[in-house]
Amino acid sequence: WYWKNIHVTLKKTWMAPRITHYQRLDMHVPLRLYETESSAREGACIPSLIATASQPCLQDDDDDNDNIKLKEQTAMETEKEDDGMILAEEADLAPNVWNINKMPWKFRLANTVEDGLRVVQNDHKPDDEPHTLLRYSSSSATGSTSFCNKTSKEEGQNTNDVNDQSSHSDDYVHKIKKQPDNNTNNDSCWKPMDIPSNWMLRGYDRPIYTNMKYPFPCNPPFVPTNNPTGVYKLEFCLPSRWVKEDDLANEEKDDDGGETSHYKKIGKAEYTILFHGVESAFFLYLNYQLIGFSKDSRLPAEFTLPDLLLPAEDNVLHVVVCRFSDGSYLEDQDHWWMAGIHRSVEILRRRPGMDILDYSVQADAEGHLEIHIDLKALYDSDNVNVAFNGRKIVAKLYLDKQMHPKGGCLKGTEVWSDEATVPALDGRESNCCPKQTCKISGIVPNPMCWSAETPNLYTLTLTLYVGSKPFQAESCRVGFRSIEITSGMLMLNGKKITICGVNRHEHDPDEGKVVSIKRMRQDLKLLKCV
Image (cartoon, rainbow, N blue to C red; front, side, top):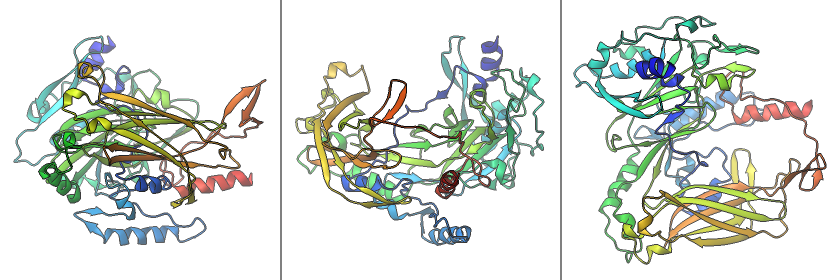
């Protein structure tokens, strides 16, 4: 009954427990797509590395004029705009990551999810041709999915066909003020919105605090019909530097002896968009076409930007954020309910040859180090020549120190290194798996172990070489520690420990779920005082 009446007929993906996402890429560690090992090494010591666009720099905690300095810093950065984008000091470190937080985002609030989706359909110039929208549907109760095309005119004719089966949840605990007609095509309906933020603290809707009950009638997987839905809009062009470099790469001739000729044939770079946190579920549209859907408010969601992305023209991005979804039943805890894009948004460019997809690191107090790297699988049927067949990963471990919470690298000595060759696979296996895994392991003698009192960290760099040329580098901070339970006692690095902890949610009294480094340090100081 549910599958037929709710999911198929009404296409209410945000209340379909079997559907957690659509077109979302696999989870992986944050990749910065560095181009050199030295950049990766420095970037590892910058926790909030920003690439092509910058955010206001955080000032010292004890300064009462922080907010004034923050605004002054923002104004200074705005004056340095290039093609509508702000260039950061770290642009040379990670030139393939573009943080779009400070772009001119616009926002409007809809009363229901259906109204929010219709905003996207109606958000086009009157003289435009009806744009085709991809709508989600299910072909059977087994969960198989398909997509059907409808023009905005056809969709408008069906706006009254929705008979919400979840009307029993209409009694929204905190009644919200009805928003303007979401079908109107009026630029005045769009208001500026900063990212990251929660719209409840920007004058829309209201925050809700619950302790022992849900903020709506408990009848999973249903959520209220009156489900505040934020619609974000961003008009943007890709950085001119990216466009020029991509055009240049396509025009280059193979003048390096052929060792990278495979990548010269691939063509343009691949682009993805990464949302680090959106509550509670959202639809993503690019140039009025559905790109993907995702749930889970505390995990990143990354999507491939297809050929719809216009390199040298204006693109239109819409993000339709549902305040409540079936996931809200799992995310209910003793905390303030917020919604919106509450973490950073980035566009990443993966240039041809940047084949590292993911990696994991394990290190213990005895110095054992084990690294697993996932790469794009390449097969000998891809015309890979002998030189390219020498693709390899070089791993190095440095005793670098981070000089300040905001960053800064004090370079130390190299304490360990190793490498592994990643040969092309047999072309007969080309239909098996799109990636291949490489393993590097070793022992670091007498490591400086990590603990809460002595948080010693090393910098690990992974560099992918094609022949003698580096194509991609990644990095992270690594600590050596061992945790075990012996005779009922919790042991860290062979010593008994007692943990005194608290249940802490991401929360700022002024910014909601957007927590700054300044606020984190304030919390830690309060805990130490207690």
